[in-house]
Length: 295
Ligand SMILES: *Cc1c(COP(=O)(O)O)cnc(C)c1O
Image (cartoon, rainbow, N blue to C red; front, top):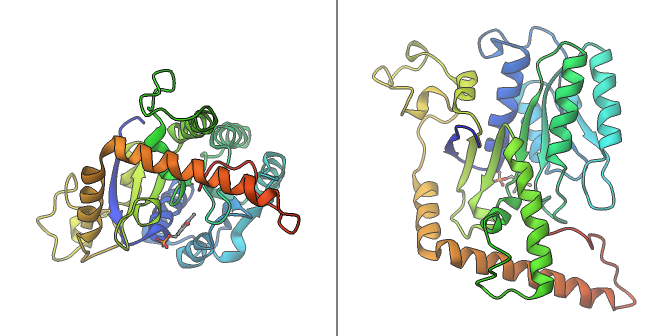
């Protein structure tokens, strides 16, 4: 990460909303004040992504029909050839491509999109067409927990993971590298973080990107003393908000600790793999997500 910053929000849906909104402001500057001005503004996500992306497109005002859903491969990961084709068509039609949501762990089958490939593709196509690159937002509402394993030393293997588990952890570590090139990320602690409902975070890779969401104190009555370096009222959707999310997260992270989280997360991966293996031996069962890395 470059200069990370973020806020707690009232759910993963809302965290995804923040990412999409930054994208809209990047390609239609001043949309916060002037609206979309009749322009066709698009978002992209995978066919296996969470339905909250539809909610977001609708409530954001670009329209649910302007959210382009990209077919996935056998690992529930966005097909890059299909994404390239659809992006090319969008640019050719003169549409504004505001954001691409890559899913890091789909809700049911734990598909992970190739974040680095998406970054390379969107940068290249935007440049070819003389446009601002779209926001690359990662919906890691479920999959973020893999990052507990990102720094685990497989050569020391101090927690004595089995060889099979080490292989899975290595795959998880490689997936986590993709998060580094994201513009923003959704994290739901109430999914795999044993947190209270709702404890969601929205993070940006570069703090300055929050400027796309910020408004002046003159536009936020009751907050005339607000200081943008500290008061989220100036750059967030929420006005009053509960603190239960951040407190629950602090309690859970501190109480369980990094080693505890590594054990819990790795164990869940190990048991998922074992269950898949056993289900596969049943003649009346078929495992549809054999090669995804997640519980
Ligand atoms: C649960 C989920 C969301 C929505 O989060 P809420 O906190 O329920 O609003 C978004 N994306 C994914 C992948 C999810 O699993």
